[in-house]
Amino acid sequence: MKNSNTEYKGNIKISVFVEILIYFLIGTVVIGFVSWVILATASTQTVLNQKNMQAENIFDDLDGYFAQYRSMDYVFEYWIKNMDSMEVEYDTNEISAAKNHEFNLRNPGFIFNSASTDDIEALSEEDRKFYAEVIYNRCVMRLNMIRKAFDIEYIYCLAADEKFENAIYLLSGSDGSRPRSSKFGDFYTLGTTIKLDEKQKNTLMDTLSNSYHMAESVGFVDRYETLTDINGYHIFLGLTYSTFAVQHEIADQTRHGALFTVLFMLIFAAISLSLIRNYVLVPLKEVQSNVENYMINKDSEEVVKRLTKIKQRDEIGMLAHSFSNMALTIDSYIDEVQKVTADKERIDTELNVATRIQENMLPCDFPPFPDRKEFDIYAKMDPAKEVGGDFYDFFFVDDDHLAIVIADVSGKGVPAALFMVIAKTLLKIRTQSNRGTPADILYDVNNTLCSGNKVEMFVTVWLAVINLKTGEGIAANAGHEHPILRHKDGQFEPVMYKHSHPLGMLENAKFREHEFTLMPGDSVFVYTDGVTEAENTEHELFGMDRCVTALNKCTSNDPETLIKTVRKDIDEFVGEADQFDDITMLSYFYKGDK
Image (tube, rainbow, N blue to C red; front, side, top):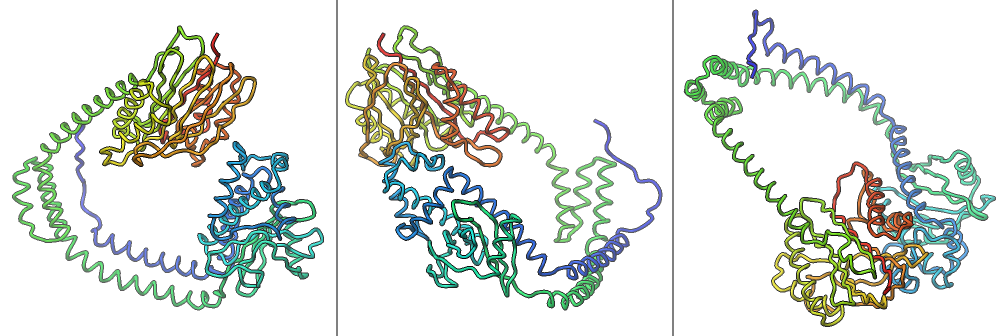
């Protein structure tokens, strides 16, 4: 190692005290000048510019939010045509959630975001009304959230007719502190209609041609932006800020503020310099002398003996005391570092062994049953850490029935891996006993897991038993993700139904199950939430839609090819973002009893 000691040559030209004095004087001048400039140039327009930038961000957020609904223009038209008959919530979503649930029961597999106009028109009149009301509640709750978060007086969405004679308020954000009505000053309800005066008409027309418009009035500033055009109406977003007259106050305070700042800095500098010289520089020079002696002699005992004579009970005294301790404890620190390094290497070795153990617990030889021609199956688990809580399994209950399991334990790492071993073992032993249906199996395993589960961990499970001769099967879902099914020559689509509780949460819980029939050429894809909740660097989720799209890109029936296709799309979507959760997938292709 090269010697890092350096030697100062020549006489000291300037003391630290003088340097600090110069810095204080320069700082005082600079701070005074900057204070003057800042106070002199501040104005209400600066505030309005900041509000304008904030409004652009808010409108970008709302544009993106509305854009996620493929048929938003249709929804706007529906609101306008049926505003007198719509039953909507403004500040809660309990009723809308119930409508959403009832809608999903009647229309399984219907996806709100991606629904086209034809999809909506194909619904019954009641379901179209439910659809429009649920979307309305989601949008108004979004405006409520923005209204509260950014302290905006009003935020709204309105529809102006083509001649700009009247405007209909569609959405209005509220914080719940004032009533909702059609009265001026309240938060408007759906369908509130106003007659536009000439100023309002010109403002909206200017917004239509210039993409956005900002207008000032007494105590307020209004910001508008064009959202879209529909049949007979222009849709606008608008918000209102409260402002104050600050120009004269800023001008008066500029001089006083700048002078006060300079005066304060001068007084502060004089007092600080006196204290620094007496209580810092003098004793610090003494410490410096002792440190230089240590650098020359490398005698830690002599350094300790001399530095202990400094009795100050401040940072300088602590510096002397700390340097003494440092000289005495360097050897012990080196020993400690070596010990920690050895412990870390041991832990890494144990985790590597645990990883291999967990990998060996899951079926990893494919094809697993080369003598069985009724099906193909492939699965893969990629833990987020060295070990994970996801697992999958497939095994024969008897010669004609195959059990398939995929599960996700709460949490990650070693605790989840231990719970995973218990859950996997219980599920396999209980299923191979060939007693009862999947719901009965989950019932027994759930009670076993609940017993003594003081750490309150749980596991979501999808369990299915399939008759390989007939393709008939029974599945039970304990809080797990929905399976995705493709019929022969068809497209992959999620199979939506109501879940039961995860295992380990509630003793004696009952579990729903449903029957299904696979025809030769059908495929089933099951997975854990690490697939749909994979995040990119923008914190966007991969989601169900992208998963289905990835599945349908693959035209092969080979389960391994299918899973690799999905994983490739996940990796491309996530990019450089770290893997947050375990990613597990299983694909089953039914050939039939040949």
